[in-house]
Image 1: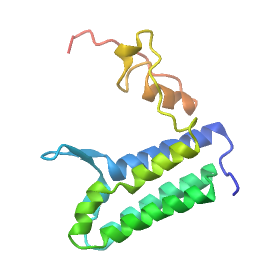
Image 2: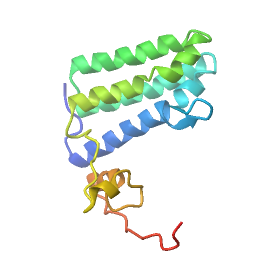
Image 3: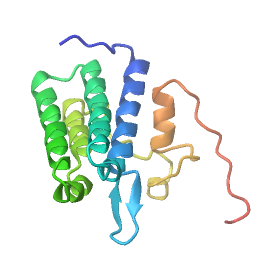
Image 4: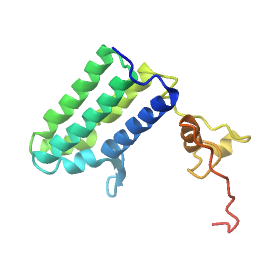
Length: 167
C-alpha cells in the first residue's frame, strides 16, 4: 500500500484529524445521569436512517486517514469491520440506538492504529520538572498533550501565564 503521508508534519496533522474524529463520534460529552462519555454517533443515530449514514461516512473518513498513513491491509480490514458492525447495529430501531452509545467503533479503530504505529500514536507523558504535578496538565500549560501536539505540527508552544488570581 502506498504511503501518501511521508512528511512528518502531514502525518502529525493526519493523526490529529483521526483523534478529532474519534472524539467527535465517541467521546465528545458526558451523559449527565449515567456519567458515561458519549459522542455524536449515538446522538445522530437517533435520526432513523440519515443519522446512521452520516456518522458512518464520518467514520469512513477516519479509515481514509488511516490509509493515508499507510496502515496494513489486515488492520484496514479490521477497521472496516468495526465501522460495518457499528452501521449494522445502528440500523436496528431501538436496540441499535442504545448500542451506538456503548459500541465505540472509532475508539476501537484508534486502538488498532495505536498498535500499528505505537510511536506516532503514543500518548504523551508529562515532562515537567515535577512530573507528578504535571499529570493532567491543561491546554495552556507548557507541557503535556497540547504542547506536544503543537510541537508535532511545527507550532511554537503557548506561553505559560500563571494564574495569579488564585482561581
